[in-house]
Amino acid sequence: MKITDIKTFIIDAFRTNWTFLKVETDEGLYGWGEASLGTQEKALSGCVEDLKRLILGRDPREIERMYFEVYRDIYWKGGPVLMSAISGIEMAMWDITGKFFNAPVYALMGGKMRDSVRMYANAWFVGARTPEEFAKAARKAVGLGVTALKWDPFGKAHMTLGTREMTRASAIVGAVREAVGPEIDLLIECHGRFNACTALQIAHELQQYKVMLMEEPCPPDNLAVLAEIHAKSPVPIAAGERVYTKFGFDDLFARNAVDIAQPDIFHCGGMFEAKKIAAMAEAKHIPVSFHNPSGPVSNAAILQLAACTPNFLIHEIMLTDGTFRKRITDECVEFDKGFIRIPDAPGLGIEVNESVLAEYPYYPRNLRHYTGAVTDIRAKGDAICYFKGMEHEIF
View 1: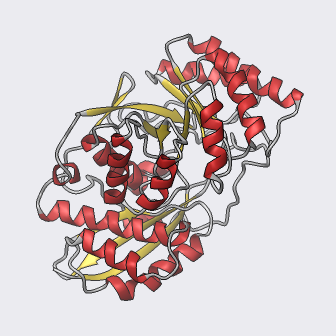
View 2 (view 1 turned 60 degrees about the vertical axis):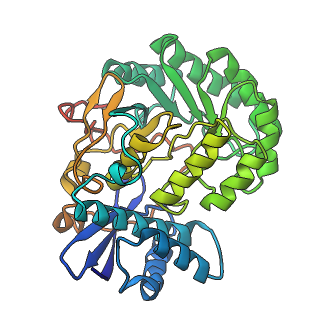
């Protein structure tokens, strides 16, 4: 069996763009991967075209060999565009391999550790601005059975927070804590925006709310600063979504920079590279939570990894991705009391409706972290929970 083509599909997902990759073979089997980068999508699709001359003609079941040789033969190592392209192709190869052996990917990576995984909700806060609005949205999410919530309460801040901004952010977190009670976990997203001094001020302020973690408190381009924050923070520190390959994570772990590692499987090098990174973390007794603010193919792949990773902690999921998510794939998220069941279908267990993708053409979108519009994820009336049996809950 040989790879005959790699197709790229970029679709508008309203808050960002999703990039799906389809790897086809001469025996009719094909696999889906995801390489959603959020920005630089055109560069990503161009990189996939460049990589074809290194990948076409290969056996799609020789995943380790493909990754090793392609990464070896590329002169410029790492970076989001190259690693996302490789990761998406690698993911699709796992999908093909699972289908070939009629087995879910987790069965090819050591077998199940668990039948379901605990999840935390992102995008539950659509349109919220005030503490009262965040509290109201949090109560609705918890009412569905969600037991952990993540969000960014820091508005337009960059590097520093003034007294008024800190007071407002603290009031938002406090309102959510009061609304949901002491047993719901709160995860605070910083989007890599603060210097060490400000990050530590935030950590000390958040301590009173007993937060589960503070995510990516500083920019990812200086791991020494992250290590300093980690050493002094009174709350757990999570990071890693913008760290690439096992080599980057070796540095992260050597610096003792995190309490929770967050590799992104479609940026770090793919599913097997993420599995290796998780093993490196396990050797240091560090749990992993694979970064997952993207589309349904990514979600399916991470659930496969979560099933077979001993030190897996908790699964991120976008709670309100709209009705279009169910139109473009046959994804079925089975949610019960804060947990999501691991699918058992062959490969990644998901099929993409290729004929529908053209209805959501690429639209250039910029990041909203510094505009204060982080909560503007959906237009009013389109924030719909897509879990099985809960498709009509509006947030």
